[in-house]
Image (cartoon, rainbow, N blue to C red; front, side, top):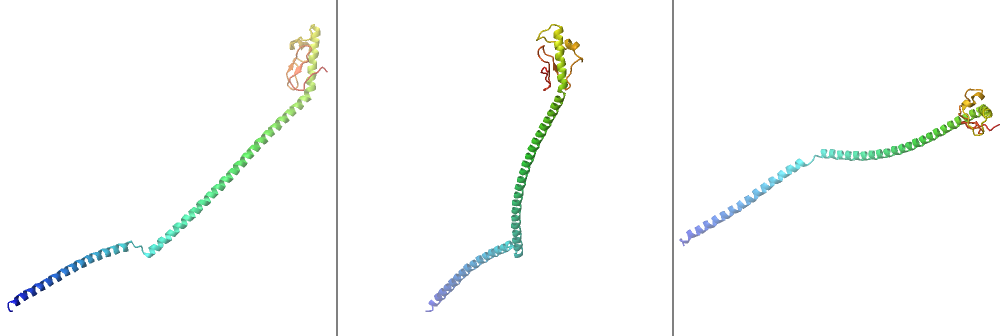
Length: 209
């Protein structure tokens, strides 16, 4: 019996030591877990601090919202101004086209009026010239009659037959003036005997009467 006591003590000591060892191991594991949790907590805190730095204060957020609203309003106003400017540009272009059309129409009308005025002036000048020629026609016809009389006298004195063409020098002795002249500035053609002398002015025609 006494010999068993020491063995019982040894077993008890071994069991106690094993228990203490197991308890120590459990504590180490628990401590490791706690350390891991502490490290994780530090990481979480660091992330929270970083997030806090990124969070915009409420006042600044309100200001940003207001600035955004102002920006949207300005964009809408700019869009409206652009539309208004486009409409005004279209109106100006339409007015310009109308004005150009009116200016072209007025230019065409002025050109037509100038043409009509020139035609009237030409017609008036022609009518005035015709009137002047008509007024001077009797004097010119009288001169042509004198030339015809000189031709007949020349033909009789020189025994010339019809068709003979005298020169001005041939007729000069039978004329009262040195060179017969039309009062309207016309040019005379003596022509042959038997053909009446003519004048270049229309209406100045000698027909033998």
